Amino acid sequence: MKKIFLLLMLAALAVPAGAGNILFIGDSHSVGPFGWKMDELLRTVPGARVGTYSSCGSIYQWWETAKPTPCGYFFRSVDGKTEKGTKGPTPIFDTLMKEVKPDLVVVELGANYVGYDDTFAVNDMKKLVKKISAAGASCFWITKPDSRKGHEDIPRILQLTHTAATPYCAYFDSTLVTKYPATGGDGVHYWSAAGTPIANAWAEAAFAALKPLLDKLPPAKK
Image (cartoon, rainbow, N blue to C red; front, side, top):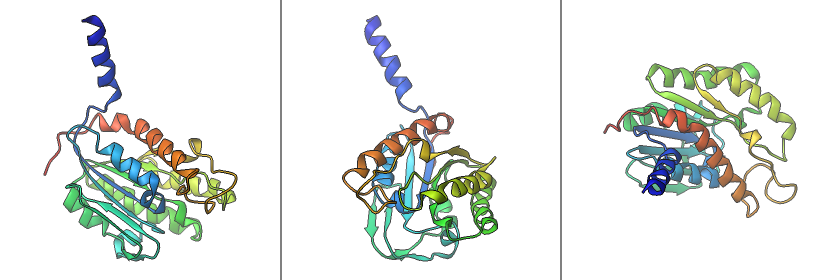
């Protein structure tokens, strides 16, 4: 009996205790294996209602203007309806906030600010985090992962992301848990046979880091 009780206690510790509404938005990494795995993990939270929306190539500005993605999207509503495609408008963030009514917003954005100046990048990301804060939701920001192509840009992007997200969001540095394969793939995305296991492990690490916020979620609301 004691052994069974101990096993049940360990199982309880392994599973987030929270519920609540969760909105997850991202760029091309979330259109692929990382996003699929993260969505799957978020939906294991007992009682949670999860809406996942990702738009390839996006920065936050796209989520205000509905700029169409030319390279892919992946949506899964709180009801579990899945939509995938190559071209289509980026969802409007304000609309998603009204539909999902999130207690927690998980953000995976940042990589696509490479071609923008520092001031624009920080201000654009700050618009998002301030909007999340004003809505009374918690925020968890997942940075870009390691890459072979454009590796020299990583320190700058991480610094800009950290500057924008702090102190509004918990900050997860994805480069600490990813290492892009030396060969194969496109040098950026983890969509190859070698990259998918890394993407899955990345999602699992981010989900584990998210647990303190998940445990604080209130009961889900419709």
